[in-house]
Length: 135
Image 1 (tube, rainbow, N blue to C red):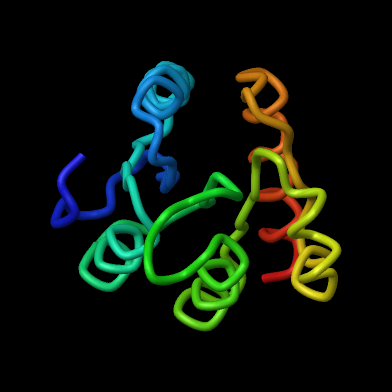
Image 2: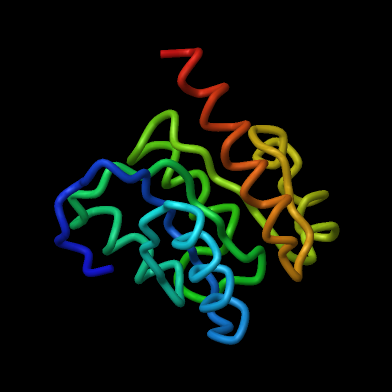
């Protein structure tokens, strides 16, 4: 989905993963489940999309090993400042990184990779409902 698409009736998810063989299937699954999906391969691309997009993001799913000028935890912190209340899910091998950035990891749950599409959908729905209750 182009970054300049106006927000529609469907909720949107930003999927940040440099592995196209992982990113495309999960993006297709989320689209089939009724989400608009914005894809980014690096943290830099994700930042540009968030800054430029007119899309109301429901959640961000980010690979813990994402490439770019920000690592996954730094991107998560930046997203929290740029879009307060936005659900950010980290996925992948986060064990070593999580210990180093424990204070950041406590904000939202972590997911394993490869993604379990149904578990991912359930997690996004659960966190979105929790966020809506806080509004």
